[in-house]
Image 1 (spheres, rainbow, N blue to C red):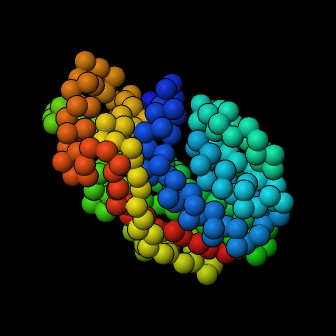
Image 2: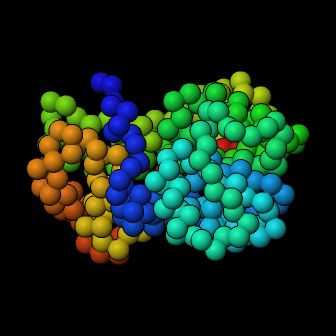
Length: 270
């Protein structure tokens, strides 16, 4: 089943719910982990692709105060949210950019970093080629991608709950972020783009959320899943949210949740 392009767009109120409902649960643990790895490289010029609401950007700016950071995203509402949330990041330049057609000259950056953006590239190889192109000689590329749905069980719960309400036309959005985890495929794509010294590392971390209700809100209203629901059954949203809250509570508790996460950190050199 083909996904309507509108149903993978991070627009409207999604950025706020994305950050508030899922930020600590999914993105904060990896932002800290990725920032440490990039900081070791000490790049003079750094490009961040798919910066989203700026969670990684904040740590990069803090740990690399002398680095000129260009933080980009394809979605204007996400970038605007990040800019407004972190106005004091003086070494960060925010810019709209398409990962598959970067608006930068060859050999512009010492390092390129992507946190949970590669999975959404419609053409992974082209995206990797663009990152390779803008890297300087001996530059480094590092990104994190999700493992499978099964390695991220809270998303399995959310996916299964929403399917119950739309049995004849199930949503496919949750499949997209958890579809790019085959190590051989990743290695082949990176190699084809020109990268060498490719390393793929397990990154199984723990996220947190203040409540099951907040987690449910984030997963439904903080992702393009809300576009699917609004298009096919907006009257079902509250019932879906209630059911998902119940299922998350059953698995992880009602408040102060600890959530297991499965990811891969991938590195390559030019």
